[in-house]
Length: 257
Image (cartoon, rainbow, N blue to C red):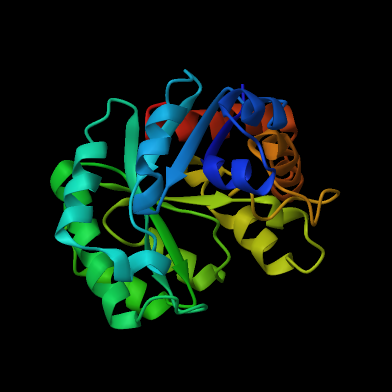
C-alpha cells in the first residue's frame, strides 16, 4: 500500500534502456500502490499521458528550472492542455535551482512566478524544486496568494530553519524525503525529517536519482520506496507499520491518488 509521490519514469526507462511500459513496470518491481510521475520537460508531456494508461500511475506537468529557458507561450499552452487530463494531479516540478544554473536565474524566477500563478489560478497543487535558492524561493512564495493551496517541497535537503520558514507560509506545505535518508553524510537531513510535523511528510524516490543504500550507483525506481519508508521510520522512531499509513494518507490528502 505504498505511494511514491515523485518519480521520473521516462528517465528510468532511458537509463535502464527499456523499450516499453511493460518492461518499465517489470523493472520497477515491487511496484507501489500508486506512483506520481513527474513530467517536467515539454518534450515528455505526451509520454506521461501514455504512462497514465496504467491505473497505478498519475502525473504532474510543469517546466523544471533547468529548462526555464524553453518556456514560451506555446509551451504554456501545451502545459495547460495536459493539466486538464483527469489524472494530472499537480503542476510541477517548478522552482529555482542555483546549484547548476542551467537556465539564467532571472529567467528561472520569471518562469517560476508564472507557473506558480497558473497553479494557484487552476487550484492545482504545486511540486516545488528549490536548491541553493532559499532566499529567492521564500520571496516568490511570500508574494503569492498561497492561502488554501498545497505545495510539495520535493526531495527536501535544506536546513531546519528554512523548513520552518516554509511551514510558516499561509499554505499547506508538505516535505518529500528520499533515499538520501540512508546516506552516511545525511545527518542534517535526517534531523529535519524527524522534526517535520507528521501530517506534512511524504515519501518519494525521485527516481532514477538518489538510489538508497544498498543500491547506491544503481538506477533508482519506485520499487525502492519501501527502503525509503524503512529509513524514514527509523529516523522518526516509529515502526514501518506505524509510519506507512501516515505517509499514504498524506499522499492521498495532497494528490488525491
